[in-house]
Image (cartoon, rainbow, N blue to C red; front, side, top):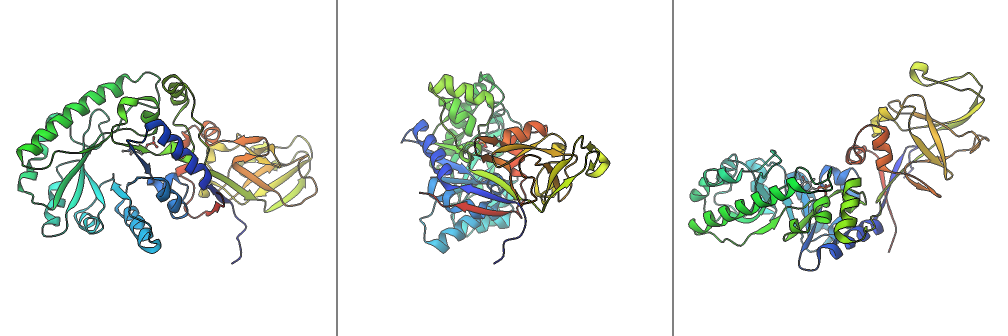
Length: 392
Ligand SMILES: *Cc1c(COP(=O)(O)O)cnc(C)c1O
């Protein structure tokens, strides 16, 4: 197979393993470590990273039914033992019936689930985790609406098994004091008490798996760790925020090492010399003061390199920072390689990652593009080639 002249993403399984191990040490052996693989594994590429995610996790959290079925297909194809899989997004009745057949759990988050439950009658049981809305105002039952919201369970048979309860924090990443999260934890405890009382009244088992913590809470708020943690961004080696780093130092007495899993590199399409006074790119927004060696890279906003990086970003070539000149185009950027490669030979640029002693981090790109690093990585094109680096 020929390799196209296009950017590619490198994935380090070693880093993913090390990051997961760091969380196992933090939460201790009594708790399960769940990894969140939504958003095409945070843009890293679910297909490429699934073997490593599967091996490293106790539970996999996904957003779509289709993603859960891909996990089951992977297990069937490779003979790997099954992981628990929980779909944390919305599912249709037909999807729920299919997930029940594959022993995938879903979230019960609103009264719309009554229609899902009807589709399950006569089929295998579906495990559900009740989502409590304790202060994010996204999915889930407000604790005080739980009894009314779950009244339909009285009419359900063994096809619905309530196996867990969860909530999601609204404000753990942007702060170093967890006031709102503590309020949410208290609401969660209240909701759990109401839920177990309701289940007892219905004659259903009341032992539930509890989970509330995403990366930041798992690091900075020990009381949130419960039975399972749901580690997304940090599993991929990215800190949720600066505040989380500071909080981790305060709470853990040290800063755990997280290693970025992903690098993004791009070969040049052409390297050429242009004379002083040349304009570069659409809108002629950049003009070269001196004779300049440029490299044209076949990567652009179609691939997930934000247009807001125009005239702001750097890439790395041979361990040196090279400026992005002018505008980011749909399929191209132009970089200044003067003094780095003046002989017209092909270069490989690192758009995101390390090269020699220099690094361009997802946080750097996010800062330049006025967004967060979560968005930078999750918007990397699904079409880009992924290369899993060999490693121990
Ligand atoms: C995305 C998500 C997570 C993971 O969040 P990170 O900050 O990436 O660790 C955990 N739980 C839920 C419900 C989520 O939607």
